[in-house]
Length: 72
Image (tube, helix red, strand yellow):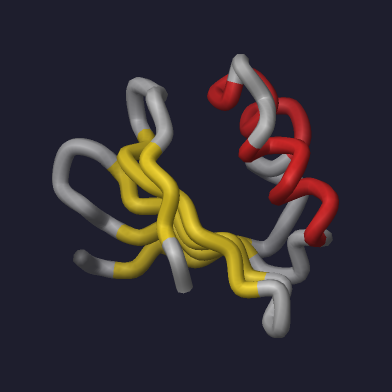
């Protein structure tokens, strides 16, 4: 999964696996991974292109999809 660096207070990088519809976030400051399941591909592309990435994440992703926090 290719990861993209983001400029937010809490997220260092994000990646998306279209085959599994899985979104992975690398969190700051410790590198923990937050994985979201069943995220539609259009949500990923819209978020990647959003100038206000943190706001888009809070409105369209966080709390809307099943998630799991993994250790770094």
